[in-house]
Amino acid sequence: SLGGSSHTLMLACVSPADSNLEETVNTLRYASRARAIRNAAMKNDIRAAGGVAAAAAAAENAILRREVRLLKLQLLEARSGGASGGSQAASENSSLVAGLRKQLQFAQDEKRALSDRLREADEKVFVAQLKADRLALALEQHQARDGEDVAPGARAETGEG
Image (cartoon, rainbow, N blue to C red):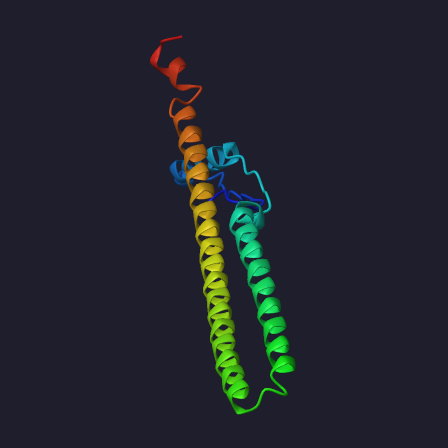
């Protein structure tokens, strides 16, 4: 296949022998069509397209970090206030700690899920960009083929002028 995001080199092997005339002409026609294909090499930038998803994930991470800090502060306050309260206060503190640990685990699981979703979204953007590049290449090739269907000498041979 010709085209894509790379430079292309075409070598055509032709022969001066009369027995290879048809094959030489076909090779030269193909090389001429291939020469008309223009490649535009460009860098695929996944981050620009996935910027919205990355910003959303960053905002969610910031919220989760704040929540974790708040929970740690509550835990420290509960520990310092419950040191002289006896066994009932210790029981309340342990239940508070258990609840805070569950919330922390939930926040970490949610962060992991969001990171996975972000990675999947980036992959989808990359695949969509590849498809768009292939379609653009196919369009260029089709336009190049349509422009060369009528050979320059064909009109002179038919007598049309």
